[in-house]
Image (cartoon, rainbow, N blue to C red):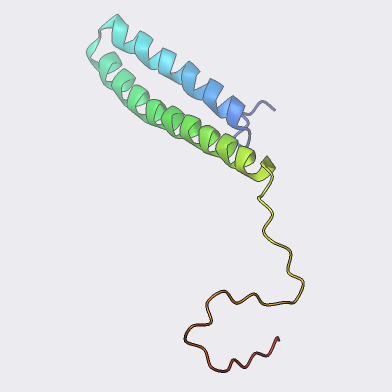
Length: 96
């Protein structure tokens, strides 16, 4: 059975574009109910297309962020480095 592939973003975008074209043809024909139906189709599937493209861009940006190497901080060797000792008289430290 044919389906529009609601889980695959590529097929949702293709479906939205096809229905937008149908809506434009209905508006172009110029009948009253055709214009009404075409405007409704155009607004519904136009908004859906806008959201799908926005989500695809966000997914792509997230993939790039994940694949980028994370900067490595200084190695934690269990030692503490104290740089300013002007106020400290005595320091107690316990590592958990």
